[in-house]
Image 1 (cartoon, helix red, strand yellow):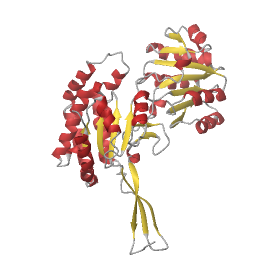
Image 2 (image 1 turned 135 degrees about the vertical axis):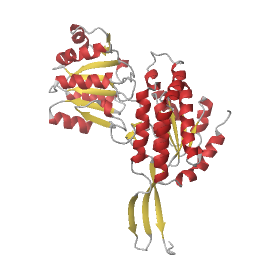
Image 3 (image 1 turned 135 degrees about the horizontal axis):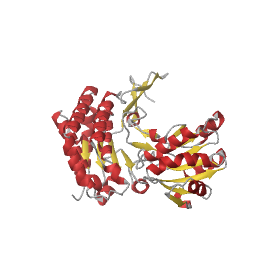
Length: 415
């Protein structure tokens, strides 16, 4: 294919069909998509295996790419959950009558055509489709070449459900992966209303720098957990371990442990068995290194400046000993990607200072950063975690896939 112009035109034309769908039609369509995911689970696994066989299992993206029975089942459940959520469009946001008699309303409306560019995450295909259908948006999906077989099959199932429901199938389209065609998408301001990149920092930077279409970023996650001198160290070790180990390839996993010097030795000693069991490679600063060495930790490296502010996406993390809360805050301000940050502490004043000072989409006290997720926050699913401040911040989900429209009714008024 030399151009995606036909698909862009079809997407723009499909906006009318999408706008005409009732909430009941959208709900039934999402139920049908969920059923097809469960019914064709074995074939989805087979197509996913074709993609996995082309990737090095040691690549951090491998886990993101992999679909299992459990993950597909969770996706199917998520699609149904989204179908039960309130329609975010058509909401009355403001209503008033001016002195001249004009009646003014402001209501929420769909964005229109949403283009999503993403890497190695076939679950994003399903999440985006479900969120766009429920919010009345047409979606253009541009996944990575490494997930082509999986994405192609998933979209074929989705379009089958759409056609079976008698709905215009071009409300959902999968675009080819050629880089030159992505450039055409980035320039398609007459056809696409918003672009959302989800993936590596390099992908996000490329889209932001080259797009003519408005962009909502879902940023990389460089996530810190600061263990305060007052922390319950058993609790702190469990929180840190969960944030790093439970699923290291995702953006809300921990990258850097900051620990107060007064509890550094005991905390790292308690943390070592958790990390050792999963062979977490630790890049320790000059104060943390001897403490971990003394604890007998085997997977240890000396940290360099490049190991801070680094999104590892793997069973790796950096550790830095700090002299109190202020130094921790300074470090986070310097290296954070403004995704998710955590303090473990029993001191209310320190918690308050941390929660209200740290500039991030999600700030935690005494809980794992792994909870930064649309599903976990009760939003059904997400397109990504937005780290910017305009329009959406944090889990970018259903209620943010809308914009506003002013409706003005008069009776011959002129200005």
